[in-house]
Structure formats: structure tokens, C-alpha cells
Amino acid sequence: MRVLVTGGRGLIGEATVRELTRRGHEVTSFQRHHADHPDAVRQVLGDVTDPAAVTAAMSGQEAVVHSAAVVDMFGEWDAFERVNVGGTRTVLDAASAAGVERFVLISSPSVAHYGSPLVGADAGDADPSRTRGHYSTSKAMAERLVLSTPAHMSVLALRPHLVWGPGDTQLAGRIIERARSGRLFLIDGGAALIDTLYVDNAATAIAQGVERCHLPQLDHRALVVTNGEPRTVRELMSRMAVAGGAPVPTRSVPFAVARRAGAVAERAWRVSGASGEPPITEFLAEQLATAHWFDQREVRELLDWQPEISLDEGFARLAESCCTAP
Image (cartoon, rainbow, N blue to C red; front, side):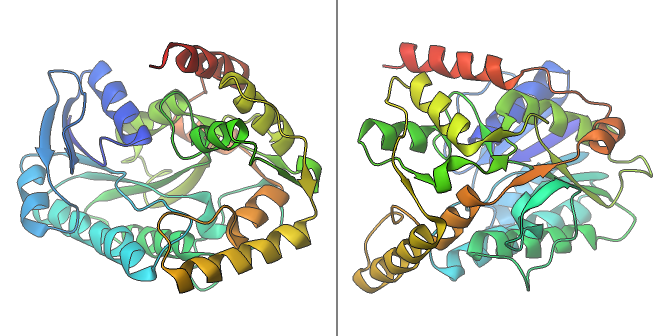
């Protein structure tokens, strides 16, 4: 198929472009800056909020993987709404006008995480009125928009959970950087059990979604995708730190203290106009202290998919990439 991937320069987008190309699909990557893609990949530069640029990239496509998004844990609502909601609407409208047959949205499990532990959970319904944080709310709105698309287009919302791997700056990269600087700490001892997803497994799951989303059992569905290997926060942080040649975290603070610190830090950042993200936010404290892992049996059956890279192998690959990084 001819497949357009938005956000093709991001961690998930780049891996998806590689996997779709490997499978013989004709891939167009749409992003704001040039990416290091295989020569066979057509690249179109632009922003998902620009209808003209999106329309140009969409021409002749049969399927879309919409991965572009603002993924920060802190920031002003306008930015999240403009890109995650408005950008999704722009891409979806262009796909409909171009006669695209399949649309896979890269969503997030946080669209259905309302603060309570998720233990062996299924996907659940996206509810922007109950989500926690601007990112989650905007992604829930985007997912509802996509899943309300009329039946003329097959649509699927995939929610990869905490994707990491070599080149990752969002999860593993931040953990390693904070461990190296002595700023990494645990909450409640890091005992919460959570799922993650190695990036190559995310890409194969997404490719399967593109190839199978027209099936009745997948069309207009939302699925959480993970490695299916829940680990404690302590283990995940420690092994990522070690992979990056950094010390393992030993300090721990109670959840109530971390949550209050997050609220104070967020207010301070907004009042001062400081750039970047605070060292801790309420949402991050909650994520690090609350169990969230998912039943993957139906997901694997529907996608006809199994993760090929175990977490143990993923940690080894992360360590190798950190050793060879300039």
C-alpha cells in the first residue's frame, strides 16, 4: 500500500517508517524537518496544522499512520489543542477528501487513565472529561474524533504504552540524564508495576494495524499495546540507568510528598515563565506511583502480533547504543 506516516521523525514514527518500508509498502513521511529515512521513502516537510501541506502529503495515499503530536507532560493547553486535536482533525479531513481507506491513530493509554490503578486492564473508553493533564485530555479528544469517523474509512486507535529504546529522549533518555546528574528518585520505593513497549515492537504492531484495520473485529476499535512484561518502576529505572552508564536510583519519597512537589513546581514554572518542564509534575508523580499494566491476550489475537524483542534484550540494545553514542 501507499502509506503516509505523520510525525515520521519521532521515535515511533521513524521506527514505523522503517518497518512499513521493510514490508514493501510505499511510504511517505511527513514531518517538520528532514529525517534520516531509507532512500525509498518520500519525505514531505510541513506541519499537521497546515491544511495545504497535509493535503499535498496526502495525495495518492491509501493508508495513514497519524503519529505526530505534542507529547510533553507540561505546557499550555493551546499548544496541545492546536496540534493534538486540531492537527488530527486536519489530517483526518484530508484523508477523507483524498479517499484514504485506512487510518491508524497513535493514541495513548492515558486517555482512559483516571488516577486509579490499572491491573490487567483492557483499553477502556477515552473520556476527556476525566483525563489528567493536557496531553491526556487532548489525545482523548483526538481519539474520539477519529473513532467517530463514518464507516467509509476503516479506523483504528492504537495506544502504545511507554515506548522506549535507542534514540528515545522521552523515557529512557530522561531517566539516564537524571540518573547521571543525581536527580533521579523513586516514589514509594518504585514498587508500582507498569507495562512498557520496546520501540521495534511498537513498529511491528502499528504495521499490523495498518494491514488489518479493515477487518470488522478491528475497525473503529481502540487497543493498548505493550510488551506484556510488567515490571516495577524501580527495576525499569535501574536497568535504564545502568544501560546508560549511570548509577541506579536509591532515594525514595512518599507519593503525597511527590504529588505536592509536582503541584508547587507546576505553579512556579507558570508564574516564572521558565522554559522546559519542571523536574516533577502531579501527572508524573501519579504515573510513577500507580500500577498500570494491561491484558494483552485479545490484542495479540486481533493484530496477529507478538512482540519480538523482550525487555531484557531491549535493555541490552539500549546499553549497546549508549556505549556507541558520540
